[in-house]
Length: 494
Image (tube, rainbow, N blue to C red; front, side):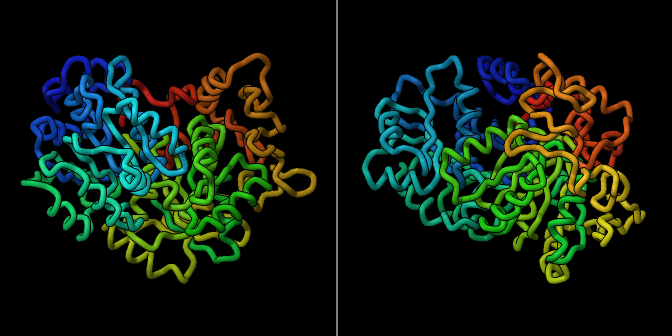
């Protein structure tokens, strides 16, 4: 694998990458960076979590001319969260340079965006709706754009944005470089790409036959009924003890209802969907990234393209209707070579969707069943995963009134004796005195290897949200001593 210098990146950008812990290009970066630096149009298909963002950001940053105070590159993303994510990566790269970036998305003060645009911006990252809004107002001039990127193009199609995307494209110069990055390539996206690109190079990164990283994500379907679905979810949270988990629901109302139920049970959870204000969405994501939340209950639209370090589990509370949605959902875990687990709750009426998903990913997913006693029986090996002290059917680990013994408060996290997250915790689950969360987590990572027994039904994080880190079938978090430093230097990705 060539290094970034050999791919054509200048020394200053290679140095910046090293400072951010990135030294080795991913396959999609190795394939596309030379083409982008050569001003070729590119249509790249690679699954989520493969480093696509840096693949197009690095060549763009190298080609920008800071002395020309107008937009020279435009990146269009389907959601605000993804636009902000890309912007954050661009700002890390631009640190110490005169390159100025701007995120343009709905839910933000338009006047504030206008003032920043008037000050001159070299790179614009935006969502289709707000970009069109600025074009209609005449506040965004795109005549100097030399490079256009359509990121997550397949999701723009699913979300009905293609018409708005085409309107933005028509405001760009005819002579430009057009780059299209996508996890999947539906016929409509191929048509869009063929119409707006010139002699484009097709790049397809195939790690394996299935579009899902099977080596890194263990998939499991658990058979439930509509009445037992919530109980089954709680049992599996107790069984697998995720470090960070995303629970996908089909609608905003179901996400809100489920989140309320989890909060009532003492879980550190919150919701993410389109009804939230942009400020609230950013606040929720900040808390989730900092591991102040353990569970994020989200809809598909809100969570498109989210890249959060440390997501060990994805739960499909409602089975997705589309294969692409399934791929994108479970792609939130098992990223950058780490282990992850994706669990889909399926009732008998979901049989058709499940078959379509398996055909689409070319893989037969493991089966399990939620039992009346609260256990999860797996078809392979028939091991009763949720029985014993961690199961909902267990009498041990419950409080005096038969409820889980935690008592965690909203937004405060949970410990076995009610300690708040912000106070820090010792390896025994008690709030520690004068210790930082990072120090506590470092000690916790050591204590997890000692094989100490399970505590109450909802153990504190320091005793190992990820019981079974030595088990190759379940994702582990060994080797990470802190929340902010979860990944080693060279293993980082975009």
